[in-house]
Length: 121
Image (cartoon, rainbow, N blue to C red; front, side, top):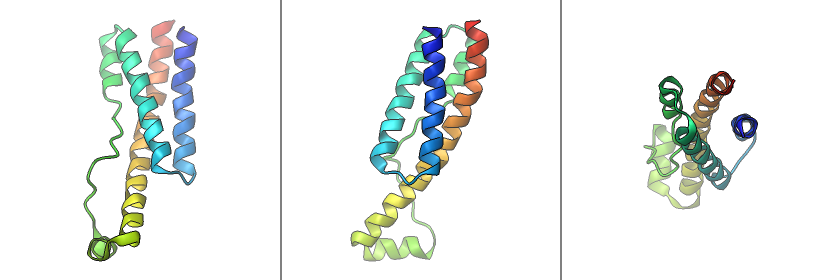
């Protein structure tokens, strides 16, 4: 079981890299967020070491529903004109914001992987 847990932690890092590097949809990011939440919940349920638990708790949740405030001239124009251009702009901003969060999630899982290897040995 320990090897499968470590494989999942490695897998989520690989998926995060792919999402960061490629052009992706909000649906793909949403699936990643769900997978990350499932792994995090599972790790929290089986780990007993307080230090490792605290670190796993620091892995951020990826919330796509967070409101992103428009900034700059393009953001203001997107609000004013709305429509297709505005929705495209908002989706792109959500994806860009999510990719920044995915980087942080990937880095946290990478550090957690080393802790988990020591924990399981």
